[in-house]
Image (cartoon, rainbow over all chains, first blue to last red):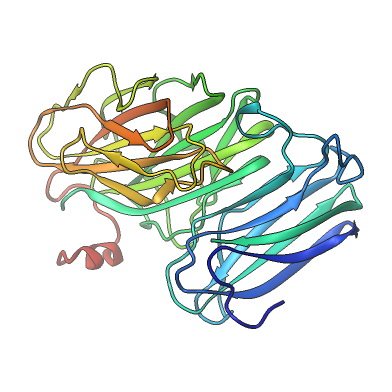
Length: 134
Length: 237
């Protein structure tokens, strides 16, 4: 993980393409710049051109993003979500979704840190993931 | 005490089956939680819940609507909600979808029977409005209007001009239309009765689902949040 603040409009790889076993992982923390307004966890999905990526609907993923404004002493949830594998539709049912991506409101403050806990079930889950900072 | 807006929050995702808002510190008791939920129309709604014990107390406002742009929209309220630090609201649907959840906390309103006027519709002509304005029956009310848009712009910009001096709540707004459903909640505090029709614009949007709920402010000496919240509002106890 980078030790400098991640700036607006940056993408940080947090999981390289690999097979990830069942269980809980904590990714981060990363330091985010004070003017950052959103941070999203993004993980590649199964599509027709990429059938080996996260192919099974029985492979589940829970994502719990958190932000700290006190140097990691306490953490506030920032938009947890849950997903599963297989091919999924995009926004409005248009096309195939190439990633599952999400998050939520960030607490205000300076010198914020971001981390994300992932919980895999029914795996292994084959994919790669990034954190999108905006 | 005067009615007003407490905290706001949002959560959104692409290709998820459940989505929670970011955690915020709501009043320990007495406030109303107003929630807008939108998701892809191929999926059906499963549930709304929160982590403060209010799950069974969320009441749907109006009916579910389906937009021509491929979204379903619902709105909920929870009166006299139990709250506190780390409060999240979670929406769950039947299968993987794009989900948007926007939340506004309304303070100083009645803890029972707060909702006065309610309406909603999907409008395909900008600015996006209701078919007709709603006339409030009490002078002191908090107006909460919501927009679910269909912009593909990033950022999409929202404005509301029909309520008279409203505030688009930045904490309950999504502007990234290239990835998520877009939308916002706009609020206005009123001290006299009137007829109000929200009028929203969204850059890059061609359709908007609009809804308005007006909430009655509690009379002086009526329902109030906890002492800590009163201190923040500068009201002595």
